[in-house]
Image (cartoon, rainbow over all chains, first blue to last red):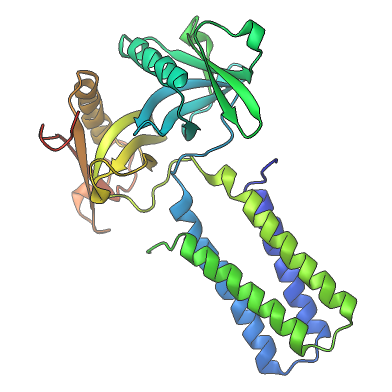
Length: 167
Length: 165
């Protein structure tokens, strides 16, 4: 299912404010009940504002881009594999890295470990994600299952890192 | 200011549900208006749920750990110093890596490049973060960019016994 991001949150907050306005205009509650409702909505905004920062920084379980520049990886307890990467879109590398978490598979662990070794020698590694086609699975691809789809992730040396422009 | 996390979100959404319940029980609105308000609140929950995932993964400058194990870093000059690290307060083995960002400053850039060279040689690096009081202290301003520095980050080689292989 698609995700919405900050725009969705803004939309939700506007709808809530509209609901509160309707309450003030059309409900025949006493003034203190309306004041209480206003306070409840204000507290909601305040609490969510201070709740969201704690969610930042943790790896995303979704949204691994089709093409990315790998910065680092981390394997935890043979349960999860974390990638830290920059999205590449239309040949441009985004400046802000993002963290992702993927289900552990032995093939993925080997693929990222191999990529990690190549990175240590100074190579730039590009990851690509596409739908797994069993008959055409690349030799150095790792396959993971996300929800109901199987994905191939391949890590390749960037042909010429200078061709990737920064955002 | 302290951040609240998921508990705060649960409390906030619970308060909204209580508000809706009050509307349904005590207002004299027609049934279809109450039904619309209920549907509206459900849509708000669904929208908020779908809005959260894109927030994940991006580096934060909140909830900085006092001590961390450095996993990786990335520097964008004049933009920020990005760090990927495990919070050591939760133990050496426990902890999902989290991404942090610090305002760029030359000193931190130099220190982290040195730490990065050690990381590449297989040496574990731990970091300590301390907050600078927002005063006129000379430490609180990057001399090169003039930006205010809110934290100092000290990077050290981890004792061998601390981080198991």
